[in-house]
Length: 445
Ligand code: SF4
Image 1 (spheres, rainbow, N blue to C red):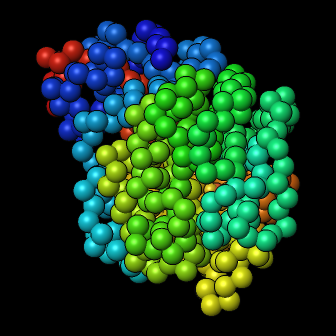
Image 2 (tube, rainbow, N blue to C red):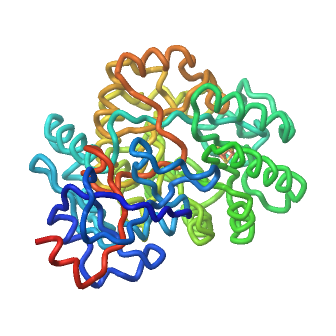
């Protein structure tokens, strides 16, 4: 984390900030007590303000008036600590709180709201925590395709299903880095690498190459994510040291429905890998797939597991099944296909119960019109995968997504840019300042 000691002026402090940063909250944020200011004029009692840099892979930007925007730590623990004392945010009659004690019934009640109420609430919560004009573009590359021994019944890469996928060896480091460079040029700020296997296990050679890939992609200033199956604690630690930002490991569906989809590893196995990732200080990317023959209660059940984890995943991908011929779910005629409203409800509910999380509109976009996708962004999705392939299945062409972004007035989200520190951030520049405890209550008055 880099900090600048430049003096930054303050225009307004809301009482909401005061509630969120009581005087006992001096323990976190690298010994900085944090108060946010909307800034345009010097403030007399802010002698040691700091801007905390969001980026650790590139030098901090100069602190000119134009660049004095909020910077959050890239380190996940430092970043999450920024919000520890926050109680709630309020906007337009809607209150949002980052809670970990949701009941299933509460989530089901949100999921079942009349559509206009659900959309209003989700969209408002989204604006409290995120810039709604920013949608992250991510690229997902299959660095090792097919030949997986697991039996996930939706997957084209399992050896147990006869699909069009032909197994290929792990890609070379240079090939992967070249792909990452191209992705960055095309506007991606997050590069994800996926390998089709059950677990990293004892694949020492492959792991060393992957660590090299992670270092290389991180060095380009991109967020770097991997999805490599089950991981142990030591592997997670090595990935963290190499610069991995995030690890993807989806729970797919509810604990109850999971055994109908996968039998070769358990829900608990998955939760253990997620815990190993979290313990290593890597951001967690964990979501699910709609269209696995689940009931709506299973969708709520998945969100309940995610939203009651000790820390919410920083990233929750919501996928619509892309049915592949030869897979059990692709061939199952009796399973209802997912429609846009299923996706919108799921995204909106995820946004409300995990407001600080990136909700990623992931696989299945080819079946949705721009108008339908727009509703998903309104519901709180703030990421897409670009490029015409998503692992092995088709995805919209890059140019088509650019046209959609232009139509909606979206811009890409920069790498490592986290949630808004406070609602005020979207209205101007917010700075994290050092405020001596004795003066704090006076300032809030
Ligand atoms: S989803 Fe992953 S673990 Fe499951 S079969 Fe496909 S590649 Fe293997």
